[in-house]
Amino acid sequence: MNRIFILSVNTATEPYPVYPLGMAVIAAALIRRGHEVRQFDFLAAGCSRDALRQDLAEFTPDYVCVSLRNIDTVDSFATEKDWYLSVAKELIELARGVTAVPIIVGGSGFSIMPEEILDFTGADYGVVGEGEVAVCELVAALTDHIPMSRIIDGNRAPLSDMQMSAPHFEQGLLEYYTAQGGIIGMPTKRGCPYICGYCTYPALEGRRFRAMMPEEVVDNLERLWLDNGIDSIFFTDSIFNDPADNYLQLAEELLRRNLPIKWSAFFRPQGINREKIALLKQSGLYAVEFGTDAASDTALRALKKRFSFAEALEASEACLAEQVPCAHFVIFGGPDETSATVEEGLRNMEQLGRAVVFAFSGIRILPHTDIHARAVREGSISVKTALLKPLYYFSPQIDPEEMNAAITKSFHGQSNRIFPPPAGREKMAILRRLGLRGILWDKLISFSSKTECVDVGV
Ligand code: B12
Image: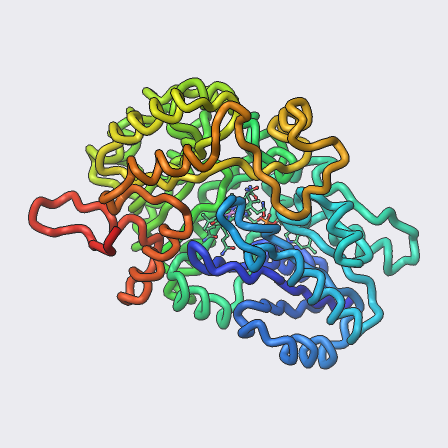
């Protein structure tokens, strides 16, 4: 048995502060193996270096585990303060100053560039991908003085649903995140079989959907409701609506158990119809986030999305017909984008009607993605270009400034069309100041002719 201090270094507060699920899952796995665990969430501790120093010194750990969720905001309008690795480095150095024990890093942000982040932060070991089994094995090996490589591949053998841990939530943190954002995350499956050109998800969780048992997921939700009064959930799966329809079984289980839980998730805008949305709505679905990603068929094809804009429109209309607010997240400026496809995409966005559209400009270049290979091929970066600091891909056939101006002009005057992203953050901040909690963008849509949606100015 070891004493293990887990530190979540995530300080992002947009679109809302999110419960540190990675830390909670790792904590559950270590506790199950009999270790004594202390969870320290830097954000919930008011970003207090003193509190961290004190807790670390008092706990006298045998190992320090660091959960690193975000590298940056993947938004080309971001500023230096949205680069989270400097905080991670600072806190790892702080921990070093208090204790000489091994420091192990993991998490989605870490897994995207493990070598570079280990070098940059000076931590000792890193786990790529799924962490539960790998961190326990690493701790066991180090305790037995077995030499280990610096980087352990947690995705060597994708974990079965029996091996995936449910998060070990802490009451104090639940209270903090409920007060801040109001939504608590809950995974229902791992993996993603799609091959979208910009995406790192398969590297994080593997290429195969592995669903957890619906009964178990709902047991976890029931506990959260009964013990902690949590009734607002975001299912954190890469894509909630898997083609095998496991998600519908989960909805049926939610319905059967009759919990007063409302939930939202990321959807792929394909294979969705009114009947499915109606069932999901009955089970508590209150808002759908579509990973539409591009606005025209040319851009969708170039990103290897494998669905058409017509399918995205159909999915969107199914939601609106069932009075379920939906939002599309769309990136302009990706591969094969031209001024003609931007125009076509903006016309397509108009067809989405009452749905909310969050538009982004340029794609964050991340290693081992198609976009990276393409940027190298086109000569905007070399294979050796460092990617820790954000770099964005823009199609060589567009002028980003002209494109941004065209999007701004097309969205002008519509409160459910959000661009540039900082404008969206401002809108959400206003809604939060009005005392509203939850996903918030759903407040920009009204289905009733009598009630107006919240007008936050445009
Ligand atoms: C769901 C989700 C969201 C939801 C969260 C909802 C909620 N209430 O929780 C929303 C929409 C709010 C969101 C927002 C953002 N997100 Co997000 N999100 C995700 C997603 C799909 C799942 C995250 C999750 O909770 N997974 C479940 C937990 C249990 O998994 P996990 O944290 O990865 O932990 C596992 C491993 O990483 C590992 N592990 C974790 N910690 C540790 C520690 C140690 C020591 C070890 C050994 C292992 C380990 O073990 C765990 C279990 O296997 C991921 C992509 C993905 N598939 O991972 C992106 C992802 C995490 N998001 C990302 C980003 C960028 C953001 C935003 C900054 C986007 C934006 N501009 O708004 C914001 C930041 C929000 C914030 N406040 O932090 C990036 C982060 C990487 C990066 N590029 O910087 C990801 C990876 C997606 C991507 N683009 O590649 N997100």
